[in-house]
Structure formats: structure tokens, C-alpha cells
Image 1 (cartoon, one colour):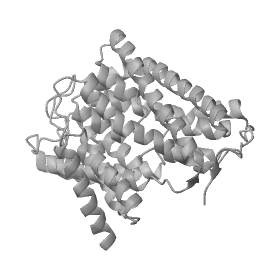
Image 2 (spheres, one colour):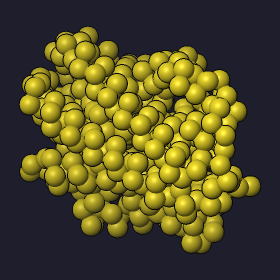
Image 3 (tube, helix red, strand yellow):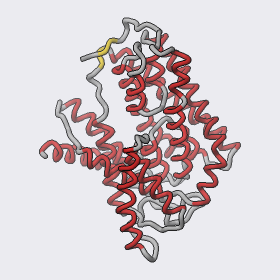
Image 4 (cartoon, one colour):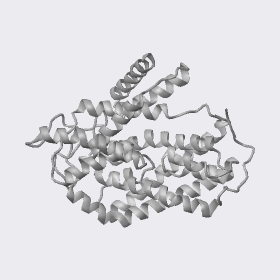
Length: 373
């Protein structure tokens, strides 16, 4: 309990500082940064209950799922070929980056490629266990640096480079999603619909069950994806589920920031200083490629640049979905692009990697980077 209270105190301070500085997504990035700094400088181990993490993800997923409408579902179906093309281009670019890093840094091709592919830290680490020459520690480190690059760079670029008239600080603001109604958003601090007590009861039962079911089915990010799908089904079906008050949204972002910060470990790799520049350049290059892709797509498709950028950016569904909601982008389209890429990577990329690397990832490990204890 003392560790949890310490975690709350440290991360609350980080959230307040980032929010006062008007950092985009301050209540997510502030706690994340506070965890990294406190554990690194004070050498203190912070803790956060798994139930709190799952509850925060479920609340964010539920709130983001409210942005889906019947019209947005039809738009997503029309976008499937473009989602496939964007996913192939981003994944192909990351495969090339990974191979270049393996040559320049002296690590195995399997380690560098698995560390570069934007398929989620946990998924890539698990996949690395299938390849004898893939170093799990290196994959974890590279994915961590990529995640940090995305979390801190993408919201800043989206707010200050690609979006107009956006107030970056604070919680997710109410907005009307493209093609949707004003009730289908995160935040707002009120309940909508004439029968909201029954809708509230349905959401209170249906959403946790959806998270549990998604976890049982081993879906990616189940406690986020399950409630997102549940809320989307309710809104597409004509219901008006209750919206989340702003204070609840802030708490959910806070919980997500703590969870992301505690999942990052820098002590597991000796020789990380040599690998760090390559990992940073790889993450930033992927972000730059996503920007270029979004500019091209916005000229061809009826989508704004921010929506395509957040959909193509190598982040997670929860992180990019929260950013899209804060920027009043098309949240449902961003989630659809992110979900399509993750499913593509989970289902298709393993076969591609086996063709490229063989079962063992047979490029020998060099002496440059060694795993730590």
C-alpha cells in the first residue's frame, strides 16, 4: 500500500507539471515521465495494481468506442484497401530500418527487425522467443525506445505541426466526431439519452464482460479493445450510452501513464549506449515516414492529415486513440487503422519473418551488444 501511495504521489506531481506546461496528453505523459525519473534517480521501485491498470484501459476503451457510429463503420469498410496499403508500407519501411540497424550496430538481423516492427512491445518480445538468434533483451530495449519516441513526439507534432486551434493541455475534450453525433465522444461530464439509467447499467455490465472476454480470447490489448468494441456496438446499434465525466477520463489517462512507465526497463541491457542512437533514429524515422504517408493520403482520401498520421503512427491503439480524441480527429478511423496494423503484424508478419530469417534467425550475433543480467 505504501508503494502504491508513493506511486500516486509521484505521478500526480508529474501530471500536474506536464498539465501546467501545456504538454499534449499531460495526464498520460506526465505520470509516465515521473515514473521513469523517480525509479531512475531515486532508485525506488513503484507499483501499480493490475486491476487499476485494466480499469483505466477499459474506461479509455469505452470512451473511445463511443465515437463509432453506423456511418463511421461504413467509412471504415471503404478504407480497408487503403489500410492494407498503409500497413504494408509502414511495416516494409520498418523491416528495412531493422536490417540497416543490424548491419550498423552489429546485432542479429532477427533482433533488429523484431525491435523495429511496430507491433507492440509485448507482442514483439513474445515473438522473439521463436528465433534462436533473436535477443529478447535487445528487442525489449529497441521497442521501448520506439514507444517513448512515439509517445512524446507524435502528440507534439500532431498538436503543433498538423492540427489547428487545438488546446493540448488537460483531459480529452468533447467534440463531434466526423460523421457522428455530439454524444459519441469522450468527456463532457454528463449522461446522454432519455433512458440513461438503463444505459448506465448496461454499460456497467457489458463493458467489463467485454474486457474479460477479449482477454480470454487472447486479443491484443484486450482490456482496451474489448470495451472499445462493446461501446461501438452499443452506439452503432442506436443506443446512447453514458459519457465519461472529465475527471474519470483524467484518471484513466493517469492510470495508463503509470502502466506504460512501469513497463519500461533500462537496466536489462549492458552496452545500451551504443544501441540507443540507432533506436532513436529508427523511431523518429518511422514517425517521419508516417507524416509523409499522411500527407499523401490526405490528398487522395477524404481524411484530414491528423487522422491519417495518428492511424499510421507506430503507437498503440490506446495511446493514439486518446491523442486523436484530444485533437478532435476521427477517433474511429484512427482506431481502425491501428487495429488493422496490429492484426496484420500478429497474423501475417510472423510468416514474412520466417521467410526472411528462417526459423532461427540465422544471422549470427555480433560482439557489439550483449544482454545484461
